[in-house]
Amino acid sequence: MKFKIFAFLFLALSISSFAQSSGIRPLKDRFKGEEDVHAFKLGGFMARVIFKMVIEEEAYKEAVKEIRSIEFITIPKEAFETQHVSVGGYKKFLEEKGFANLMEVRDNGDHVTIYMAPDSRKHERYLIVADEGSDVTVIEMKGYIDPSKLSGSKITLSKL
Image (cartoon, rainbow, N blue to C red; front, side, top):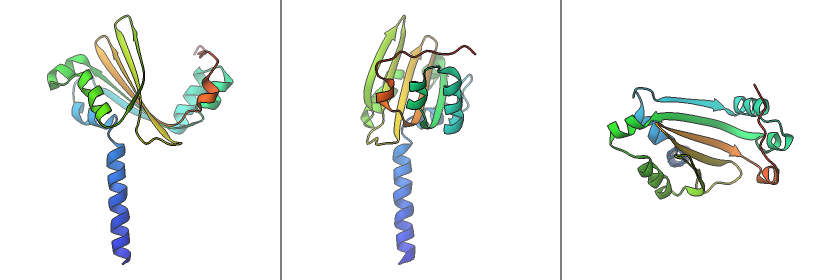
């Protein structure tokens, strides 16, 4: 009986972790080993330390205090062409997986889209897809951002 319970729990955890990996993971797997593709991940502690160093306003520091991790990947547009995929196709993939499009911004040829993962609760997942010139940058952030701390003020970055 214990084995059946253990097997069920293992299967449930495996399925849930597979469902959670549908954000930045497909890009990392597809473009692994490609030239000029750079990916890295920051744990929550390091991400919060960096935010505290570059953001001056206390409300923003408080808003991001529950970030668990930030993961980045930068891919040259040439790599998309080599792999016969597109940024629009990746965005469509995200929407098919249930990611909600929260906001889109276009400025001087750059196109930034912010998504939120489906079924997010207190520990949310956000994806930022920045299509800028010759590169595409995707940022996945896990954790909670308190929106009440962000409203009504302007982000001010300190000089490093």
